[in-house]
Length: 447
Image (cartoon, rainbow, N blue to C red; front, side, top):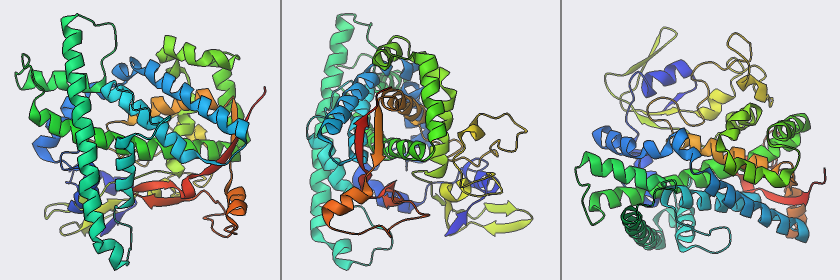
């Protein structure tokens, strides 16, 4: 393995020559995402499907879908109110995951998955599949070779694919009906734009059935979007809460920005965003907070496969890549003090200063969504989701980590289980998540 902690070196394997993803990535996530996912596809096939789905994930199109995201987040706030009334401990990561799943169902398929209010069979199978993914440095042979694991993989894959097959057929039928009635007022979900592009490129605009190749890819892509939202967005929401609690001055500044842009009356914020989604672009400090949280707590990195003709040249030293798994480690780069002044401190302002300022980020050093042509297709969606989440929660709710209280309920003393003094450290469950699902308690704020 060749571990890369320098942005110049990382650029040589992700931009100057975008090396293919390492086969271990495909082996790892195949049971979860299938073999047509955008994460591990390569070459012309990857370029084709990335191009097909790109229009739906453009910032301009996502703005047309903000109303649905707001509705899902309003429901999330109602759930927080219930937790506050009961004064109970709950897993914030689970609640945030269910929110992101509902948002993905609406923006991608225009279908309510109702993950926040019910046990959805797709979500249940997906999360069960996660439990069986390989564990780093696992030496438990029973877990590795457990025959039930392979049976469970097949069962969950069948459940997920069947569920999504049905949803895609329903969306295709609804789309046809909308075309007949000439209904064009509603914003198109991402899958409709992808299908439009696919049908145009394959000259199948008059087809009366959903093309099988598109359906196969769409099923794997939806699972990919679910995976990304399940991991990056939900865990980042937890760390936004956690790090702002640790830095009350930053929390105060965020809330002041929301007051100035959306008004002091928090009950009108949801409608204000729905009426004018572009108002979210007037929240630069909120975006800087998101980026700083992702700098300190990135969810994932990429792994690439070295090639004979690719040799990393760094400071005059040559590093052949042939035969190596190449791992540009986002967490490592994000915490280098020579790249990030006061690297361990929470300073959102570093994403607001102008070039020339000592805090200004070094090009390519921030890689929360990777960097280059294989960057995350859903990063604009993540920004929008998280800004809505912040606007609708931070001024109305005080959400605090409750690790100690959970320990008391469990009759355990886990106070020594910290990383850099923090109980909410990251662990690897497919991607980096807050340990224990971030147990929390919430109270209403009265301003």
